[in-house]
Length: 111
Image (cartoon, rainbow, N blue to C red):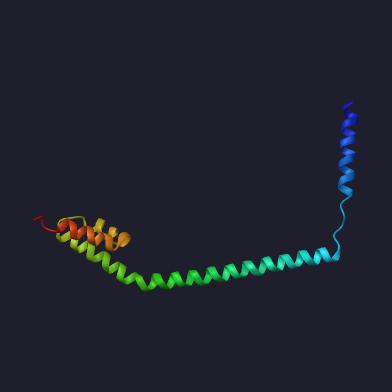
């Protein structure tokens, strides 16, 4: 009995597999047009990302020197007040103005 069921399932799968209709020429043209539209969209996304990356690179180059100078200032200030210059240098690189505010607040005399 199992053999008959397996045979029926196998034959039904074979019948469904052979009943697939081949795509017509207009269907293929529509699919090609969809692929072309997707390709155009992807190319635009790549172009936009490329221009954003170039803008970020330019901003990083423009801001690198002031950022490093500010970090050196934080390190100098921290060393002159007896704190870790290296630690405050890296804090100055990461947190910029907030580090300077923290240093000024820590060294401000209590009244």
